[in-house]
Image (cartoon, rainbow, N blue to C red; front, side, top):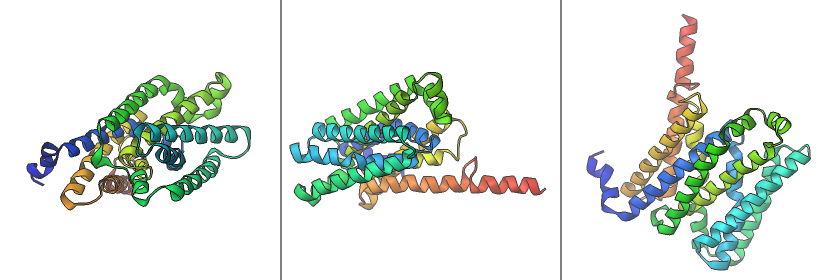
Length: 289
């Protein structure tokens, strides 16, 4: 690819620069959250929460149209409600947290689809589901940037107890009783990133930029900070590659970004440093010698 094809779209067009800035901010915030979700074996919770915010965003849209504020508030409220209810049920009953999330997000998804089908149009539904990364305005960029800042500050504050919670949820609960608080704060950060991301990539696509770089990072780094750094880098690469693919091949931007992240994930499975197919084959060869 020539330098003009690589840099030209971002130099010539403001909407491409805005899309790139939005994706960079999303990668900085959502990729570390994704790594922690993988570490806590809650990878599918991100997908569940993305569906859980749909009814809130739909209510905000039906009340105020394509209002950034109304859809954001609605998504945050329903997302936090599902996270809170799922956490309470899993801690007060024998039901595991993943099963509790699955139950509540399905109810939430059904409600969201019902609301949109009653009063919304197909075009507006596509906006909610797949985002408008090539049409980000100042307000959307400010929202995404603010959520990324809150996420990085929040993770820095609760980093150590959060890691303890990831490794042994019962220990922190017994020693300090702060387990539920840390868990709730972390889920709140997950919801905020999903709500911020759905303005750019949509509720269905934002999970891909959160989870695919995080899962791929497991094949390139062993420590949690290393995986966070690699996940952010992979998210940035996927964003740039997806936007360029969308521009040059006239493809939808959001799916192109997620597919680029998927290619990085597959390459990581094959050629990553730790636990990949290539690494396992090399280690097996050394053992047989």
